[in-house]
Image 1 (cartoon, rainbow, N blue to C red):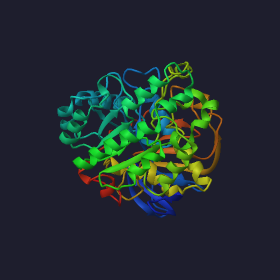
Image 2 (image 1 turned 120 degrees about the vertical axis):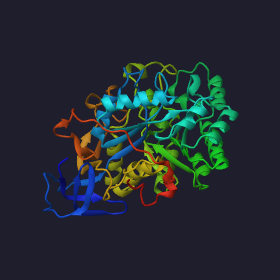
Image 3 (image 1 turned 60 degrees about the vertical axis):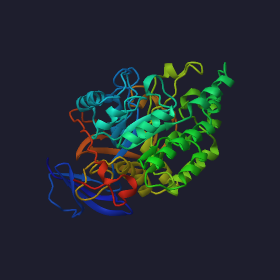
Image 4 (image 1 turned 135 degrees about the horizontal axis):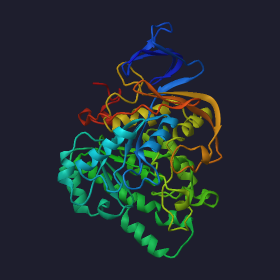
Length: 450
């Protein structure tokens, strides 16, 4: 590949922003402090723009195979590229679910054929597949649904959970909502058609019970564990007891939407775990700032608008978010709520470290040239019709944000330009995972390269 020089950028490094030029070659970052006159085949003028690492979204549902009327790996990866997301980790609850090594390999082949950006696929736990889970090494981790699933992906029996934590070595993540609590609440509110009752059915207690249960397993077995989509401040009390095995994330809908938004947005914000209170919004954002929570993800889970328009409880839970996630957080930077370095930590570096994704998450010499140019002054309004996701809607429709990605590079190759669109000829690569590096708490200086 030719050399490319990103000239005169505001470069977002791990702990500072510096005015510099960045030289890349063969898909790698060659020099983060290159001369503005360095020899290069291509020059990208970055004056007035910030150059930051590509976003890694560690929790998405891209619906392929089996549910491709909602989304597929092509449409989803276009949405990723437009939003500055250069790598994604996709969940196993497709049809069929990815609960075997062969199932994961089939999805990787689809990624190789269709994805504009880099990809990795979790393997799903069932009550009786721990032997299969123990065979797999080159995936991000194991996903457990402790509640909120159907069929053989639901694992809420203690004996099965103990076996998974005891007999496997991959990092584990889980959807933490207590199934018994959810079912009891649903029975109590049987017959409701009010979507606001979704937050009463999937209440704070359901989240707390399951998160406490899962983190207890992680501590007893000294097994690396990642709490997905923390939705309530009550869970922060569990996470406040630090452990070298435990990390956590929050999703954008849990810091930007709350129960007061149901009258306005209805089933568009129906999610599992459910939206909680405005106080939870504030305290979850603060948990990012004080590092109780390490990662921001989307839980991108699209349905068609026709499906979402069904009367509750027949409406499905889930919303699309990947193409607006970075812009939502850049808008917070322009408002002064956080720094662009913090956004890069939460959305780029931390997920790379949690999941052992080699060469990702930072702008450093030797790292992969997965990069995003962002304009912190650009204003744009989110519109349903302009979304690249196949579902063609966003819960943030009509919201104007300041700060947007304007170009996305995967392995040094420009896959998206706000003015010229996508490079349809390019395909991303399977991510490389090295779990021997010890995860987030063992890699304070970044995940590293080869």
